[in-house]
Image (cartoon, rainbow, N blue to C red; front, side, top):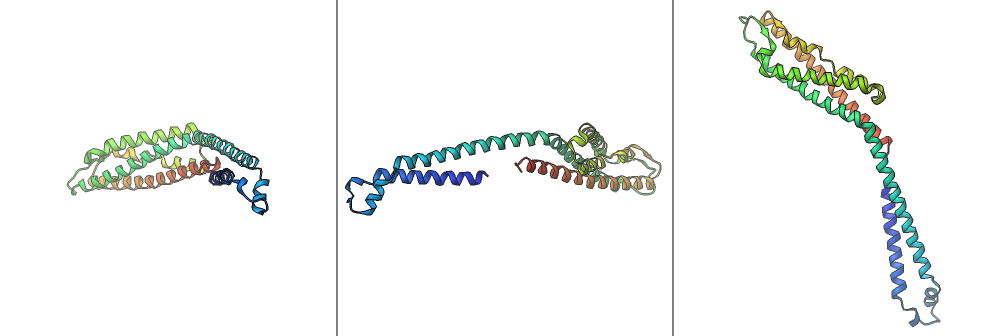
Length: 225
């Protein structure tokens, strides 16, 4: 709407200035009385015409100011509604980055699993970063679950709620800390956890898309999309 008002205001002001300049510069007294153009200019109420146009411009300015105030209020309301969504989106993106780091660390750990002579062990001992990544990832998933529990359906729509709930699953990560009795078991464990982490990464991508869509829909609903 603002795109319409600004050109209209510019045109009205331009016409008003042009009329005012014409009335000031045209020397009516030097025109011949028998010329129709002189009679026409003599009959024009320049002051009234300019006053009307500038009054219209003033009205447009008031409308623009009111529209800006409404847009500011709507934007503020949209930000308030979206605040829990924005926080959850940030946490979900962090979880996605950690899931991707976990996948990379597991892939690296799999290459560290030696031959059949290896007696097994713990995956977290094969790659130093896995422990920290796993701990951080589980903490982030806990945070997501708490956000979901606190805000629930009052902030998230059905599809967003389910997407976040699915993405926050982390139970498989506990297997990282378990002991494998053989190298085959260790390999199987690493592959299973890596595939689960990849599935989680996909679920996190879905949750991020759902959150971004709900945020965009909310802003559009308040006229500030």
